[in-house]
Length: 259
Image 1: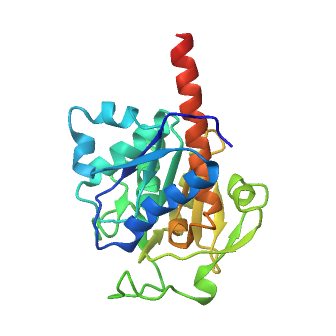
Image 2: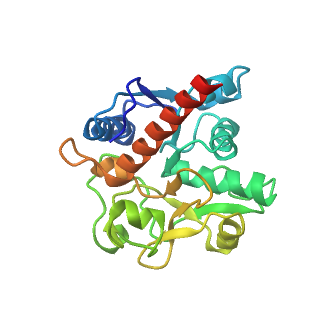
Image 3: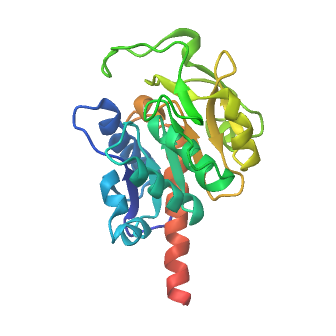
């Protein structure tokens, strides 16, 4: 349990849409975890265009943790990448889900590996280096509020010994996700070389999550843990994220006192 008394600040990278179930679920999941940890958390949506404005670094730095939300395509492709780059280079506790996962991989490809034209097929289907491409089992015209997918598509294996497996305290999970794009397996080498090992795979060995052992907390998942969080059963991954954000906040305050 954290001893932080002031409100912990989480910035949500993305363009809030009241029609998206996942966006409401993101807000709710954070508060589920906060109440379990008995801390106060303020979450603020940071629209992607604002992440390119002159005061963007100040707004990002005011956050103790960052969550790259679902919702691709975003209003600003470059804005989303800028927010993710901030989290990675400043070692800010970071969680990315669905579209956030996709752009985390693109940011990694562009700024860590050095593939400047790395992109997603959703953004440019004719690009040379498509890191994110259509899933083989895509479901066109499926409404976001449709019943969740069932069966093997939701079964995910976590890598033994990974941080992700430790947060769940198990190695096989079922999660809900709504996405017609996933990581192009031809670029899996990129994540590994950059220091972001793949720690979750789908039934057909598809990449479902990456993490960074070198960061305080840096996890990106194609699935959306927020969708299965409940008031009386906060999601373990979101809870781990919020706890790390609170720990960062406490250290930040302690460092400011000693400075």
